[in-house]
Length: 403
Ligand SMILES: [Zn+2]
Image (cartoon, rainbow, N blue to C red; front, side, top):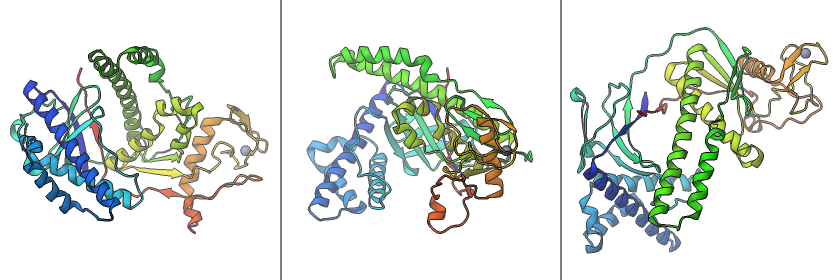
């Protein structure tokens, strides 16, 4: 199974300097070629990968851009491939038009087979023109990396990501299924009645972040003090993101261990984030990340994820008798079913419905209320069940930090 593992590493001063130049050259090549392709596109001439590769060779021969020869050629070539992918996605209408790479975002340089050497016996990773990296190997792996990507995040930390093809041991089957209702008040409520708290990381650190940002606003743009303050803001952001990811990692690993089938509801996280009332709490709770993590871990450990249609009235349906209460308000936490009298907790009831619904694959519609068709049924499919097939290449990313 294809996985990518991410490790932190600590470059020495020379390596830092070389990396800064490499990142700069990668960005320059990407931006120059993007400009070239944009100009050609407007003039009605198409520039493909091979043509941009020839243009790079020509660029390296010019005296003004001779410094491109001082860094490894591998990441420069990879940068052209990334640009090619960006254009392919754009033409396939999967993505927006490629954007220029900025100096102050995260930086990356990708090395393929010729650009690095890996010796498993002493765990040494050597990169062209950089030498051996001081990596904290916090996770075991057995396969040989196919590509190595070096990144620097906005808070100034360096990471190396290895693409590997690992043999994964499936987790033992437990025979249990679970439905999960994701929310803002509680991160998750399980059909078993359990609730998983939402630590609300941002709220705890929001004040600190706000203070740092206020100071940043007072600094003169581009000055030395502005630069240092920007780093502080970035570090604060990074700590919040780490804590959030760490929490989600623990929760999702536990779920995949305990249950063979995990049923979720397809949330439209993007539209929730766009809604200003929800934006902070939703992106804070990381509901989208929750689903992504559960999905790749399930593939990784041989478990199954089922997704209920997002228009399925999971909250309004009584999980005991199936009666639907179309007038149930969003703020009702507890209610008694008007037909069978069972008293439900809103989230636990929803979780039970999600579990049951995806298990039998039946269509449940709210009576007296219009339920919009799912994309599947709009295309003519009859099943509203959306069982994700195990994909051949699961992307697993493990970010490791040391104190
Ligand atoms: Zn009922």
